[in-house]
Length: 202
Image (tube, rainbow, N blue to C red):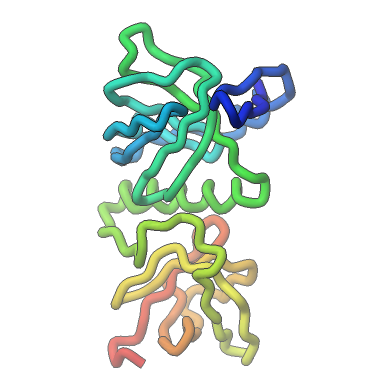
């Protein structure tokens, strides 16, 4: 189902589309995340994120939104997400929203979820520099061994390394620079690379 927002009421009218097939492309993943959500009347509640995908979020909290109601969710690891309620539990403590994510951001959200899932599976510590997911202005320059310089989006960064969203993937082991920091490509993942910085800090 797709929804058209009524900005005055905070509700959405539902109309049939082919978005069911689009939603089936993505698995919902349980990441053990926490956050806050705001209902259309402005009330905010703490919540647990039951599972998440680039097109939907299942939320457990004190009060479920009404079907078709617009909900805004703040998740530290993913940022601000907005959608409409498409399912809710009879006990009123669980509901699912269909996200309203611009098409050009769906892949970015999918990569971020994939990175978080890999981090959880491998027991890696969180490396993110900020709690924002929308990183259009958080770009850096990736310098390749052949002298080319590419614009890359930072996904995670720490003193030891960084994860970058980038179109061109240098081979694992290649010497690169992320901004002014030198390092080597330590691995590839869907949509990007991980770089381990040199120990001399330059």
